[in-house]
Image (tube, rainbow, N blue to C red):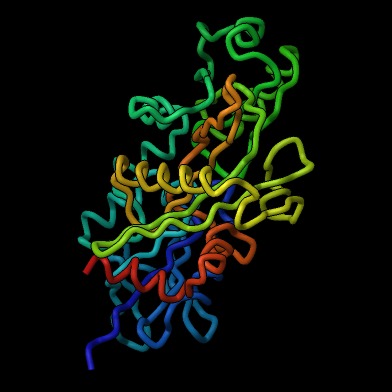
Length: 332
């Protein structure tokens, strides 16, 4: 019998999404094939890294080689499944660490993680490949040359969205309906980081599509339609049930095919790895045809009980245990 691979489900991190990450780790722990793999949850915050043991205790991680001791034996990892939402697991920092240690991991590489984590950089980059996005401007803290509220209204129109450039779960995001609300919205966004993106409002249908690729195949999941009575798909909508998530989406077969084809194409353009999820807004062109606008690429999508990816896997008639096994084995 071959030796079982040992996998770390890496969670926690240093962003406002810390608690969401812990829930994703629990989801993944329940999804993985425990007959095939030895699975440990590794929790981290700052430089405090611990492996959770089966008896409920923890063991400190030796960051020199990403190992820990238990019962007098050293445990090393063959693979890291990163489910940190935010820094350091979604912006390339942790990926660089694992690259140095030659430990394969579940996400994209350092460059792609850094690029997709910066929402403003991503939309500027992806537009070069003909992908539609909302119009946006970048505002940096203490930037004396920043546009005035009236200039922003002229350029982007109202309403608009103000959001941190590098954050998730809609923390710090505001929907601004008039220029006099911009300063307060900017202050809220700056609580999450030094760079803020102001984005034009797109009135349409919000959808999201998951995808992964291996050497043998491409899998694009069914499209999920996101419907909420909230002003936008905020934290309460995402995690507290204030949303209807409809899979498959109530859209035409043609539009579904276009979304899945675009998702696969973007996966290739970005040289992604593992499961990603891309969020879109479907608006109408002047001639009445559909226009697909990219919102963002999630390279460590949520894996909680209420997350989109597990829903889409089920809707596709797949077993998430098998999906995770394919993703891991693709790198060996």
